[in-house]
Length: 404
Image 1 (cartoon, rainbow, N blue to C red):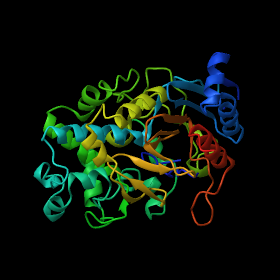
Image 2 (cartoon, rainbow, N blue to C red; image 1 turned 120 degrees about the vertical axis):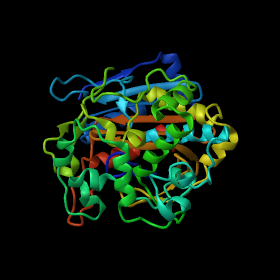
Image 3 (cartoon, rainbow, N blue to C red; image 1 turned 90 degrees about the horizontal axis):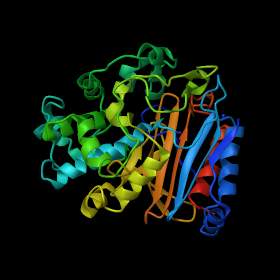
Image 4 (tube, one colour; image 1 turned 90 degrees about the vertical axis):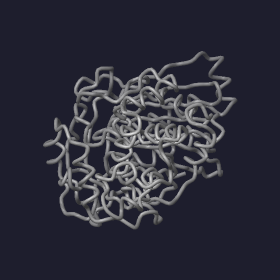
């Protein structure tokens, strides 16, 4: 099974002591019989570390059985081991939370999925496009609105047809408080990536900035407050939030960004103002909370079964790495080699990667977090070269998802 890890931040993307939370031998035996093999999982984690990952930690669930483990370090300078339970920047996994909050407002009749965005926010998407782009198109990335990143972070423009690739923008904007309206305008004013509703859609964080403004419009509250009250609280998540400052208060790993060899050695971007992508990739959580969230979502506890069915209606979408994925309303559909369907999302911030997938029946789950991003060097075609970490992660995901 190959799960694409996109090449840029805030998008669908992709240490040496070992530390884990051991279970009793009796529980381990039961887990192994159920298809959850702690030894195999720990070995796969260690292989990711040995391939060059700074630190990786995860939680895997099979029914009521749970295993968590880690490998590598949380801090290169101190050598502190990474461990399960740390909070982490989860990147575009944020989009599922936003989509769930929007669907709750659809259920209340405050938002229409197929209503033009101009009916709610005419000043943000003016003219004919505003009457053609619907809320659904924002949720599933078929709006045709461009990504704001090559304009807000011009030194990353090489991955959007430009020529620049350096850490200049990353360093310049470490403490910048971006105006979300300004970022929306960058995406709206840029050349369209396609006609509204056309497929394949093109992944764009601009869509989710607009959805955040929509939530604020219909609820009268900041989008983060709406999600905290109606999604995070409903799922009983204890360690999930939108940070209101560049630093993280809870224990967390340092986050090392390689930018495809442009930053050597990789630099720590743990402290960063996430306003540049807050509604698209700003959430902080733990692997345990992510599993709890997706399990509740797929069980119909966050949105109604009818809303969940809408979220699982997928269309082809081109991710920021150029690969085509099956994307619903804030949800990915992933199919294993044995044909089993999983739902979830992956994501990234500078120095951070994460992925969370849950089987369609909700019984098998994996959430994985890593504190080193964009390790691949670039080839002459400007595409990432294969790296041993890629193969090690593929193997880890296969084992974690029970894909024999």
